[in-house]
Length: 121
Image 1 (spheres, rainbow, N blue to C red):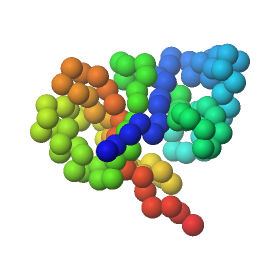
Image 2 (image 1 turned 90 degrees about the vertical axis):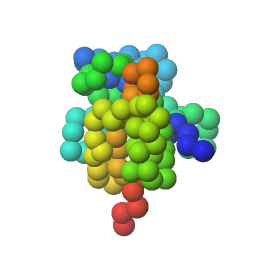
Image 3 (image 1 turned 120 degrees about the horizontal axis):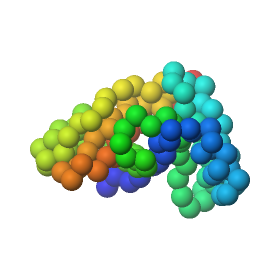
Image 4 (image 1 turned 60 degrees about the vertical axis):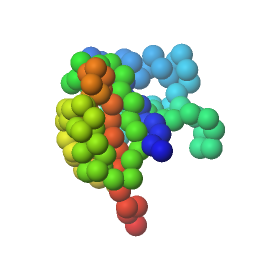
C-alpha cells in the first residue's frame, strides 16, 4: 500500500508563505540546494507523526499537492493511465531523492508520485 510521504504548497511568493508558516506553526523552512528554487519545510522531529514538505513557485493550478511514495514509478504511472488518470508532468529525476511525476485523478485532482532513489554515499 502506498502512503503520502511529502506535501508541496505552491505559492506566488514562496518566501512570504515560508515566513507565514514559520511564524504561525513553527516550521523550519530553508532553501534547498538543488537544481530548482525550492524551500524544504521541516514540520516535526523524525519519528513523530506527520510528514515534511516543501514550498515552490506556483506552476500548476492546485495550491497544495500531496506526493505518494511508490516502489515502481513506471508501473504506477501505467496504472494511473489505465484507471482514467493523467500524467501532468514528468517523470523527472531529483538528484539524491528519486524519480518524481505529477498526475491527476479522473476528476483532475493533482498528486505526485515518488520512487525513492538509491542512497548516495
